[in-house]
Length: 402
Image 1: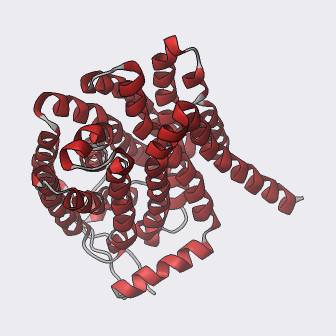
Image 2: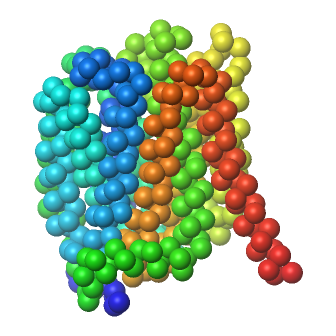
Image 3: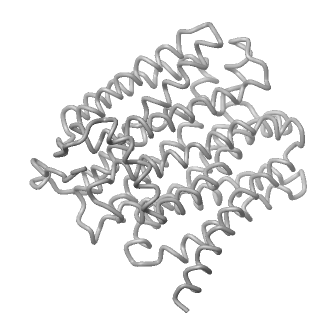
């Protein structure tokens, strides 16, 4: 299958600082859609008649939808004109958000939650586009800067959602998100450069090629596994933490929002990790990210009088580690094959959000059954599993060289 990339008009476009900031803003605003519901599920569920046991389905279905979009839509970035594809998916996101705001039926809300995730994948078309535009020597910095915006969107979505829901009700958050997506779609149409891949493949051939890419690229498989485990821990923590803060510490939605803002400090990891990857420090930075993520839950187990502080420390450290490992992985994956970046990114990010969906789906059950201690133990186990695999791969490489 031929998949060379046609650069017109990309050769005349360079990734200036302003364009990096624009890409970062768009990515952050779009990806926030899949996290608005996370801190307010205890407001949404009773209003729609969902049991507390089913409440976490709202979060996990959104992430499953995102994973499906990554697998079925993002590969089209190697097939169709990128800007048009991004605009269409953003328009679907607007319709889905409005559906979430207006529906009164729990089953319909769960369906539109799936669609919100499915239609928010345009960010994963935008990031490979930026990688195409950036020169090799600064690709990690550019991708890291844009990922900083994306991850800041993930982290800020929770406090923004909590405050808006506290002041105006949870439905207002989805209406506001739809308005923001309308503005983003206009920005994409007016400012994003076009990229039309030259190809000789059908959509079916494109999807079938994903299996071949996964088999041929061990680095892709390894980085996807590492980050899938890390994101499972991330989603578990941020789904369970609002429950702990509300039930055990009596925090309101606005106070939970302030807590979530603390976690946004971790967004500084993205540009730092991009520069580390450009400098050739991917291995040691990955090792530290997984190790610190596994240890990050320890502060939550300190004396109850200081447990809110411990939760905040865990949030910052865990966010930092997860984001660092994600950008390091993206930099490594994008270097594998320039002509297949959209499909490589689709496979990488699909694995990540499958892990995230799993983490969020078990959060309520783990918390109800074992309390915060259970959350801390399970949350630590995920990055430990990634670390063990990472060390095993490193040992095998050393043995091959010996």
